[in-house]
Amino acid sequence: MPLRASEWVLNRAAALAPRLWLLALLSCLLPGAFAQTGAYPSKPIQFIVPYAPGGNGDIVARIVSQRLSPVLGQIILVDNRGGAGGNIGAEAAAKAPADGYTLMLGTNTHAINMSLYAKVNYDFARDFSPISLISSAPLALIVHPAVPFKSVGELVAHARANPGKLNYGSGGSGSSGHIAAELFKSLAGVDIVHVPYKAVAQYVTDLIGGQLQLAFNATSTSVAMAASGKVRSLGLTSLKRSALAPGMQTIAESGLPGYEFVIWQGILAPAKTPAAIITRLNRDLITLLATAEIHEQFKAQGVDSMSSMPEEFGAYIKSEIPKWAKVVKASGAVVE
Image 1 (cartoon, rainbow, N blue to C red):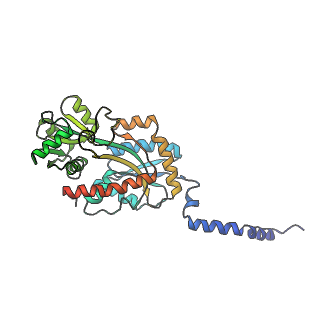
Image 2: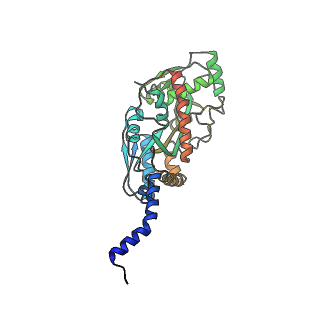
Image 3: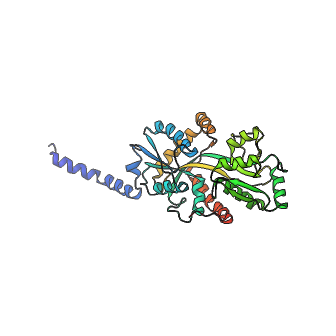
C-alpha cells in the first residue's frame, strides 16, 4: 500500500536525522565554515586603506583591488580612512565583522606604531588575520656630494671619529626616514644628529644645498637625484638588491652587515576570519602578484611586488613589532 504523504515525511526525517545531527555538530565546531565559504564572496568587499587618497599606499591598493575584483567576481570598494599615522583605519578594520567582507592594507608603519604612539586602540599582531604581503620598497641612503666618505664603511668610520658632527634630515619624528636612520645609528654605534622637517621636500632641498650631510630617502627620487649629480647614493636599506635600482648595492653590502629597513605593504582581515576565506584570498593574490602587469604597475609606483603565505606574513609582523620597539625607545620618539 502506498505511503501517505505524512508517513513518507516522517520516515524521511528519521532517515536523515543522523546526517542532520552530524552537520549541526560540525557547524558548531567549525563556525562560519558552511555559512561563509561556499558562496564567498556573494557581495561587495570593503577594502580599508588607512591613508589619504592619492598616496603610494592608496595607489597600490587600488591597483590590487582593480585586478582582484574580476577574479573574485565582486566589487572591491576602497575605503580611505586616513589619520593618526594609519591608526584610525586600522582600528576600524580590527573591529569589523570577521566574515571576509572587510580587508585592510597594513604596512610597516602599523608595526612601528605599536611603540611609537602612547595609546593605540588595536593590537597589530593579535587583532588581524594576515593574508599576504604584496609589496616592498627600500629607502636609499643619500649624502651631499661634498662629504668625504664614499661608502657606508667610510661613513661609519667618519661618524665614529666625529660624534655629533653629522646631521640627517627626515620628514618628522617617527617617519620612515627617521626610524631607518635610528636603526642605522644603533647598529653602527654612531652619533648622528636628527633634524626633523615638516615635509620631505624641505629636507631634500637642504641636503642638496649642503645644510644636511645625509638622509634616508625614497629610492625612486634618490636614483634620479644621484643620476644628475645632486646627491651621492651609498646604498639601499633592503637586504637584497631591488629591481627599482638594480645597479645599487645595499647598505648591508657596503659596510653594515644585517642592516635592513623596508617599507612593506600587505593585506589583512579582522582576526578570526574563516581560514577557508583567508586561503582563497591568499591563493588569488599570489597568482595576481606574479603577473608581469602587476610588476610593472608597482615598479612605476616605486615598489617591488611580492607575496607570502599567511603564516609567513603573521610571523613577520610578530618579529617587526619588537624590532622597532627597541629602535623607537632608543630614539626617544613618542606621539601622544
